[in-house]
Amino acid sequence: MIIALKHDARREEITGFTAFLEKQGVRVHLSEGASQTVLGLVGDTSGIDEEGLMAHHLVEKVIRVQEPYKRANRMFHPEDTRIDINAAGGKTQHIGAGYLGVIAGPCSVETREQIITVAKAVKEAGAGFLRGGAFKPRTSPYSFQGLGCGGLDLLLEAKKETGLPVVTELMAIHQLEVFDGVDLIQVGARNMQNFTLLRELGRCKKPVLLKRGLASTITELLMAAEYIMAGGNDRIILCERGIRTFDSYTRNTLDLSAVPALKRHTHLPVIVDPSHATGIAWMVPAMAKAAVAAGADGVIIEVHNNPETALCDGEQSITPDAFAALMGTLKKYAEFEGKYLP
Image (cartoon, rainbow, N blue to C red; front, side, top):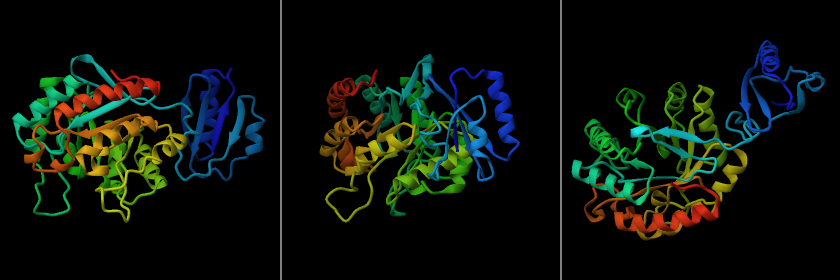
């Protein structure tokens, strides 16, 4: 249930009204926008008298939410959410609410030289975040699984060298203890419905990049976000990374229609991963531009200094030079879409 309050509602009145609602057995989520304050009621609202609420002097209107996701629902939070992530040197990077975030880096951290070289290159080209996998979920148990904690140390060294906030994937709850220096925790497609992990991230105050599952619906993605938000962590970025279809030309099928659909139903930022979606390096620039044109709040792109020798996903990685050229184009697209790209 959503309760929109009148514009002249005072803080002390809202506090008292919230306490009154909580006594009826529901949790109340307060969302203060520029033009209106909204109360989201989470729990069993069947016993709450809707007509009685409408008669209250603070209430503008009451809306019952039909969708199973509540906190992630745009009705709970009409204005777009902006995720702020502190970088080294006091600079803050933003994704959402008019800011276009660009995350770039190799699929996996391989060597010190590789990650430092790529980090410096993507920063110079204009990326706001550095990505790199330390722990890698692979289909085959014989494929390169990442350097683990050693790779994480190298990623944090690249962060120190460049000042870029780092994004890397968390595969298991026990790894959280070594993720202190990570700025944005990625939940991969295979873990999108790992509800135990999602609940734990709900208790974590770090922002989360949540990728859509291989065959997950838009509602299932939003419900996965709801698991995290129900635990108290609302710093979530959704990522469309392609879904599995009958076509085998590309690695996955990039569902660009998910971008406007998600933007309509949720206030959370939505970004696109054209690298995993296509699996083909020459397609990445076109799909990145299409993502921004579709209204995405950012892109996450795999960049490798020598894709031919990459230990993981070299075929979908673009070179630093190609990334720099793409950034020049994305800035124009961002300007056309009315979004700010530093």
